[in-house]
Amino acid sequence: MKGKSKRFYYGWVIVGVSFLTLFFSLGIRFSFGVFYVAILREYGWGRAETAGAFSLAMVIHGLFALVTGSLIDRFGPRMLFPLGAILMAMGLAAASRITAIWHLYLFFGVVMAVGINTISYAPNMSRIPKWFVRRRGLASGLVLAGTGVGIMVMAPATQVIIDVADWRSAFLILAGIVIGIVAPITALLQRRSPEEVGQFPDGIVPDSGRTYSPPLKGSPDFMQSSNLSKQWTLGAALLTRDYWWVAFVFFSTSFSYNMLVVHQAAHVVDAGYSPTLAAFSVGLVGLLNSVGGVFSGLLSDRAGREIGYTIGASCAIVGVFLFLLVRDPALPWLLYAFVILFGLGFGATSPTIAATAGDLFSGNSLGRIMGILSTGWGFGGALGPYLGGYFYDQRGGYTIPLILAMVSFSMGILGIWMAAPRRRRPFI
Image 1 (cartoon, one colour):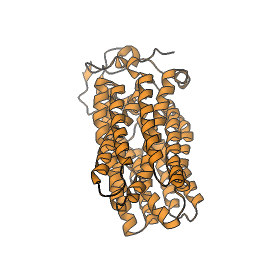
Image 2: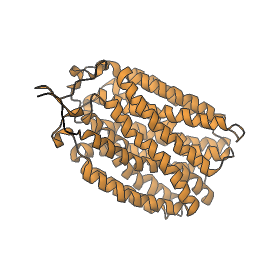
Image 3: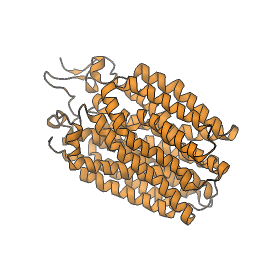
């Protein structure tokens, strides 16, 4: 027997649960820029030292990623994800009580960061290649849309709570949401692989002796059967040039994106706009991330990962350049154009690099491999926000940081073409 099973494919449940997990976990993480403005107003700390809490969170993200990758491969998501959600909620609740900057570093930068690392990008995206081959880019885009939609909802919602109550109440409410929603849905609905529910990747019953779904007509060469059968180990992946180029793309993309995540709202407020509009602009960027991610996932499945990433990063670069010109409310179209171009552009890059890792290094060690790759994301995400605050404190503006963001996106384009997922290397 072969062909598509008549049973509903459980992989789409995994996509839905992962979407919601990223919706809350990363939607909350990337609302830091809203808290950033409120905390700066209350305590008057320097921008670099305050942004340093987010930078520390990203360093912890990078350092803890290998541990998370090993744990997800060994214990699976049903055990690991609820524990991560509980830890994240504890960090949020504790952050509501801070009175000194080291409290922010400890509770947001360490405790919550470890929790988020356990339930966010790498562990969720390492599951998708096990469930999808034919529609890997689309599935990756749909899952990562949770991040963008989460930012769209959580950033403005956080600002509303801060306006009505205060930022401490916002931390507590978010903690309750994580413990009440993320922990139970991951415990009840997550699964390790299609085999665990008696299905095959993509819901397609393979021919005798085959363990993968047939690629779509016109799919790139790297999705053909001779490559899909290879089972990579972490050690083998680390010995390839392709791995380090992909890690470079993770670093470069994260450097630019996380710099904007932390400092976007502050730059908009500095230009004379209201904090509410600033928070809404952060949320709208997140929503457009989702739209760009889904379309890029479809495009990269057909035209290749390099094309999808290049188009997305190019749009993001143009958007950041326009954001550099935002000085006052007299030219609001500059802000709107930035939101659209940067939102769609970055959204196109994130699922593309996740799918690239799955294309190049498939197998049961993908969780570990994605974990190590996430160290690049973590360190890039730490350096970008810190330099944004440092140069603002030194120069009184964001000109240098935004130029660095454009350069870093350009480096990501170079990296994806050098990694060349279109011509996957033989297994070593």
